[in-house]
Length: 511
Image (cartoon, rainbow, N blue to C red; front, side, top):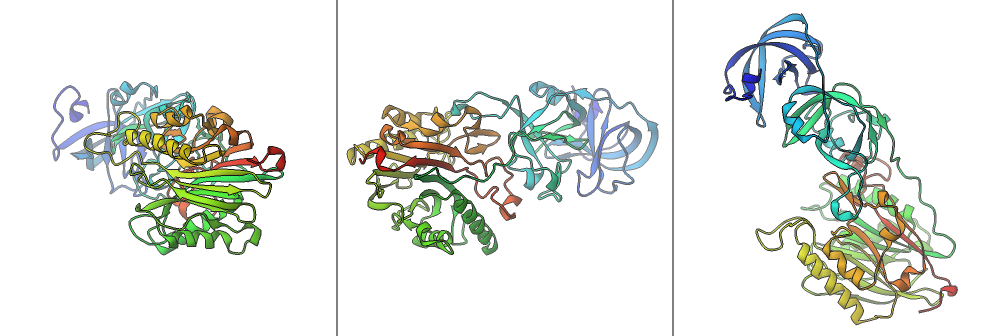
């Protein structure tokens, strides 16, 4: 077998017929699985692609078989294909190696072999669970982006897969409806086959996974305390009323997105909404208002601070309840460094409290140019985001400099990255860092690493009014695909909302 795969020598070319005798280390027969089985010797392992075999008549783990098959490749992996002349040779020597998950050098040496992980793993990312049946995992706790300023678990170069490469597997792998895996949950030690496919190391469990819920779905939100006002920052993940290149692809999918977003936003019961990734068209804002105001008491109705569109495909919008707040002024920062114009609005409460709310969505971390502002560890366009922050701070200081400010935005930068420095230097308070425990400081998960790209910054004058800051983890921890068509509040977007409550009574003093 080692000679087939080229261990220390050139591998056998594809299309050659070979005869092999070895022990079956794992069986994944049938169209709903890998359509084959693994063979193993003490030194090596190999996959046998056998779509002709059903789960009932395929070789079983622990049996020794002799067979003829052709050599082949699948996504660069050497395998055997379409076995013939299968002969059962009794029971074999079924060995299991111990895989140390942090020892990356071990992965290649144990490729296509039966291994056991003897320590619990932490689910780092379920983004592909419903789509492909796979999860990113970590050890020692949740894995955070290094720019988040939080030290916890270590992300593995290993994906826990489901014994197949199907899209949209039914039922949902690893427990189905009985077990909802969220990032932060724990997987007990298990045995599987380690292999490499689609550019990643993967382990296919040979036994049902046993989970330990460490991050249950959050309970319903409470209402704001007493006479408090509530503001929400929320990226809606491309809310487009047109069926085009962005947003929901079909009218049915948009109806689901719309219904579920409405349920989530109503549950937060905010007086101010800073919403991002809304289609840059008045029709999209009008549609949002209709969604949120229909069948609601008039005192809970929203109004847009500004309807005009800018040059970008998406925009940030500010919605407010006129029954609770009076809009005095609205303006935008039109500096060319901003791909989407930041929006600033001055509001007043019935008690005379005046303050400024800013909604902004900075340049994304993707779409790197060929040169210049490329990814040097803080994502693409880090220099531009830093300039955006400096420009916006200066713009806010130029007018209404003495007014308390609450900035709500998707800044596409983590807490310790350079784009955040301008806010700290100007004296703004990072409300997430000030109010949320380190292990819970995330609103987004990207490739297995948690962190908060969404931010709530307050000037000291505004920060002294605040009585509660919450992150509502209904999205980032959840699987991305089928959740979009399910009932409930889960995975209505890819970002979690930030919720800020503050007092507005006269005892705070009018500004």
